[in-house]
Length: 109
Image (cartoon, rainbow, N blue to C red; front, side, top):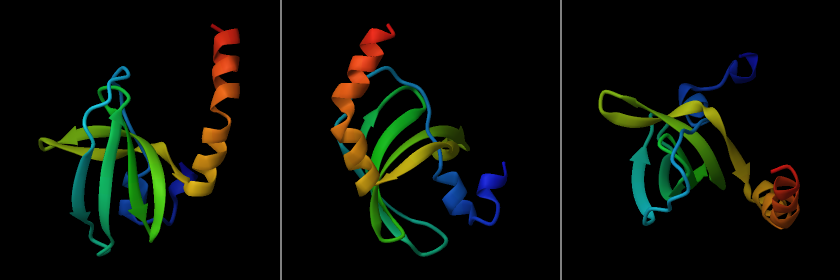
């Protein structure tokens, strides 16, 4: 899709997540260094499904909440294109509307 045109490979790969029903594993902290020399400390908050996770990480010097699909390649789980990274401002807006979202979900269930 044209929305990723011009982005570095690392930026595109960190745009996704996968599938596991509501269990929250212990928090994991992993340190990685990508080819752009931007080191990140990812904290896996929970696995939503088998291939989807919520992580908190630093990206371009800013903390983001990343909800993303992952895929397996050569035995390693890698971030896919499907997902969203929320800035702290966006995360706070979403968090502040959780009750309204829950009410709408319940009305449509």
